[in-house]
Image (tube, rainbow, N blue to C red; front, top):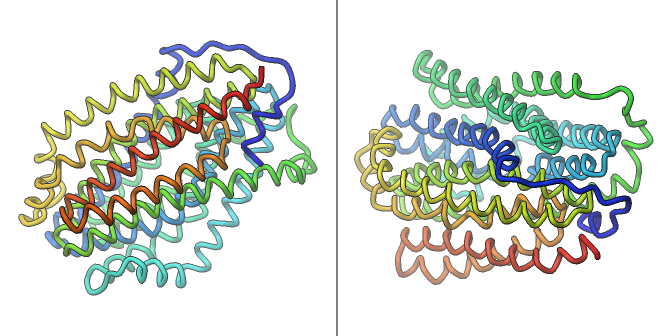
Length: 450
């Protein structure tokens, strides 16, 4: 199993120090990069919201969930690449650092191409499962049919970002994410408000941004590859390495699918309350996603440092990584929650002009404000487990958390309606925090044997 890597690691212990400054040096660039990512969704929603039709906002939200289902299912191309690269770095195996990149890019190209070729059944299955129709369905299908063309490039960007983070090059990761999101936002405004392309304009902006970023990222990666440590084809396609990667990827795929199921389920249940509540929840989910990206910067630091500690076989660095990233996460999440409480109403007004959607979003804003503090430990544990490549345990704890989430939904929604739906989401975040933390304590002795 992939998670057994750390338990069987051989070679000398390579001590290194984890400091507050070191964590922030890794986390801050990626925090800036990640917070620009939900801004793309905010601009998507705000631009379409200026048209004053709740159905268009809902259509894009539903289509985005389908893409998230695909892209997040393949999020191991980012997280798995980070963990394996960081472990190779900690073990000072330069050839394996390059081999990890080549293997992941091959998977990205094949998976992305299949998404384009099979776009019709994917769309039919996705929109059917979400249970939408009418104007919401029409807007969602238009968005989907254009954006799907970006799939191979989007997955390649996952790989490149993961590889850069695994090597500790968070500044390069920031530059690439800034290019991706800045291009997307700029073209979004041009295509929708400037040229009047509507929903299709939002999708075409995404396609252009993904293509441009993939080309630049591949160029930067190629320039950083050392010819002296170039792996042979036999090493890239080594059967044992491929099996290890496959086990890691399969487990992380199940984990990512479970996470996307939880959010897709939230959106589907939102639709049962009508288009206004669906649109309001879609807007508030951008609040949640924005808060989560603040935490993801610290989780990215945890991935690199935990993976490096496993590769270096140095437990003190691993344990200090856990303490520092959670501590900083608590501080950041508290500030984000306070910002939502104070400025949430104004942000909602910027994102939609529909009075009924504004009113509904304000009613449920307190729940969205609570999501960042509730998610702190869950997000940092994700980073730790990804860096350590404890993939099987990550998968199992995620599945358990989803079960707890569904039980909470079944108990709370009949009593509290949409308030109950938001409460169930908070239960899900708390369950992830507790189960992952509990499991980590049992894995440490096996990963770092005395």
